[in-house]
Length: 186
Image 1: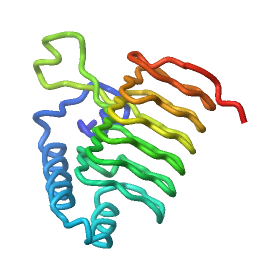
Image 2 (image 1 turned 135 degrees about the vertical axis):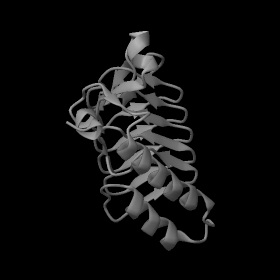
Image 3 (image 1 turned 120 degrees about the vertical axis):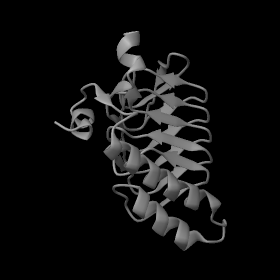
């Protein structure tokens, strides 16, 4: 089993020294660097390059520079997706966003985790767990979403939150760690 296959299965894998993963990250980061250097007015070039970077997109989306990810091919964004500046997606596992997702500035979605065992950690081993975000979700600025988290549809995550556990649909959740504040009533 390759290191890439191990990552996909959620097993410990060598992220730091595996040649295939290193090369894929370099190629993706070079595309991100190119994207981040494009002029704001080059909207079509920006969109085309994002379609090269991101594994699956719909038609209407916008990610304000700067944008960073590890591989890109593990990211899926829905229709009418918007992210403000400084979005970071560490996509060693799948990160899927539904339709009508709005993300504030300086947010991070991190699928990678590291063993508590120092020997394993020092060997460069890590694991990856997918993240999913439903439809009609608003994520405030400076939010961090950790490995394995699922955020339901029609959710608001308050600014500065650290989402460590699943958040069900139809709620406002805030804090560190992020907790449900109230239900959203129609």
